[in-house]
Image (tube, rainbow, N blue to C red; front, side, top):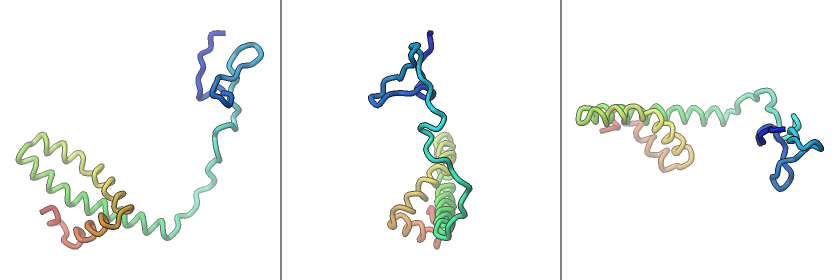
Length: 122
């Protein structure tokens, strides 16, 4: 049989070698093997998780509000770089918001930027 080994559907032994049937074909994985636990019904969000999500959303909004005017100014100086920067505002905002949740120093800087408002980019 000219079957190609596929680790997604074929079983392996403890050393990582393909497991074979008696006829020499590759043994299939069991349906319940490797799947881990199935996700049960969605649990309601905890109040702490909701607060964390609200903080993250505020951080994303603040960061985007700061970066968008900077990208607009950059587009006056160099349109190509300004376009590239404007395309990256949302991903940068997401990453900076995640950093703010992990590092209090970044969160403090974003809190100060929220107090200043839209002029924080200046």
